[in-house]
Length: 349
Image 1 (tube, rainbow, N blue to C red):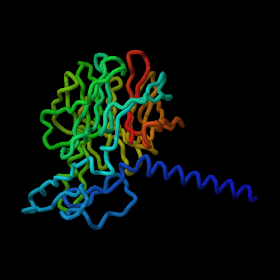
Image 2 (image 1 turned 135 degrees about the horizontal axis):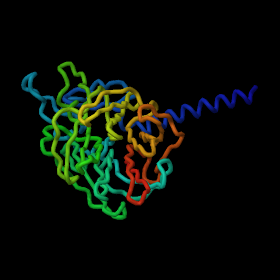
Image 3 (image 1 turned 45 degrees about the vertical axis):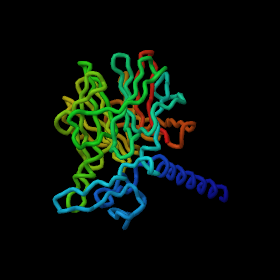
Image 4 (image 1 turned 90 degrees about the vertical axis):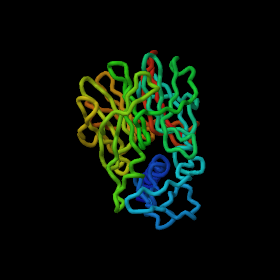
């Protein structure tokens, strides 16, 4: 009887330890309270209660606190010069780096040990004319909101270009986050992204967050992009889009971090998507690869799941971690090389 009790107690302790690791190590960077326009805004599913002070106080030592010296209720607050001082923030993408692993199949990976970009996060990769383009959130410059960075390789990753900060014509006041490139049939690249700036400037008077919106931009050379009209997809709390085109159907996957799940939407033209439901529970920050009638889903962690239809995934019981590069391995993006092998880009911290 004592032996049975000891075994049950050990199982409970192990479950609690795994939950704590996933919640505070893997997902901790996404779950926090952000100070925007003088109000605390929930990002993800923070464990702490909403702070009661330090947001909008210009005497505060919090460098991520915007000023609130509004001249009227119809004007936006003046931006805090320290709002985007990335190098001073303990949390956030400034501490992230982009690296990659390779594999001969889609389940097992070997880390490269090579850092492609510093102060960079959430990579999205695509191959065009035998050139690998890796796009990422670029916060290398203090005082500037999230930008789009890029590195490329023309020899299957043997050598890489220096990081380049890109621009999107017609972007306006949007801030590009979580880039997801797709190669079109005509050779252009459509880059889907989440506008992380909207919550900062478009909250209602009572402070409610608007639905998150996914937009797209188009490029002929993979370097110069032009903003496309309209919203591709919107949903409360959606982050980290990934888009795949299989046959005549487009599939958009997005992470619902608060619910720790992946949402799937479909489209016939790649421009207007309709939600289809929950594709996976138990992970977010999705990347999907389809090959030989089998679908592979990679979520933050990095956990791998599979599917027969791209709409409902089940865990494959396989997890990839690059412990040599940092204490977090997350935000994957998988491509296939001309050699027939695979490459997975991801962030480490």
